[in-house]
Image 1 (tube, rainbow, N blue to C red):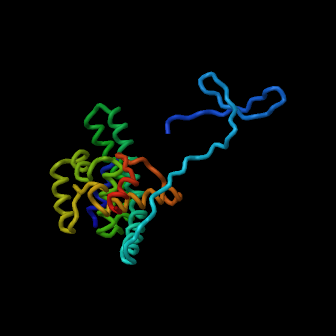
Image 2 (cartoon, helix red, strand yellow):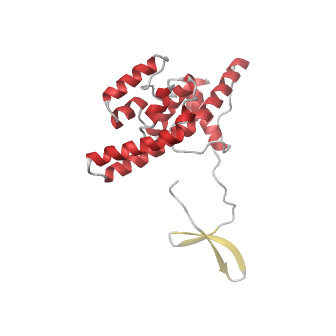
Image 3 (spheres, rainbow, N blue to C red):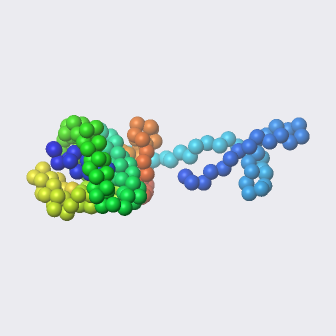
Length: 220
């Protein structure tokens, strides 16, 4: 699975209010100031809770497959998140570097950093875990692994790495598409549940997916 870690190395709510305690005569209350108006805050402010669709399994086998997929997804998601973080940092940094030579130098530096830090871990991924990683990289960055390699290195290198992936019945061009892939829908379900219970660190995906709409599609 050497190729799995190779391509990764090339990746180098917004409205808020303030609550102010205000003393008025002898009555002590919390107040909210909104555009110059003051109103009494008589309720308790709570964090928004997103109620997820109920899981439905048609058989014990489908339940078992779900939890196997959950284990694999939780294992590889941090690396997809890292790829998105590094790509964002790389793009911001590259935008400030005018020299092509310095851009290439910086890209190689990020590549070496990732290789030194994560190569041994990535080598331990199975084929199915590698394919899930490819999908999640697309989910987080909006680009397939093939396009990332092509953009950061070369189209020729991307072509040969994709051919190597095919030997393992995989593809660097595979997108994350929960609307048309049941496995991707299950991955999206898994991620949302793990974000909610705090077992995975949330990172906004490139596209927005409505889990309720997806659930209606796959569990009519």
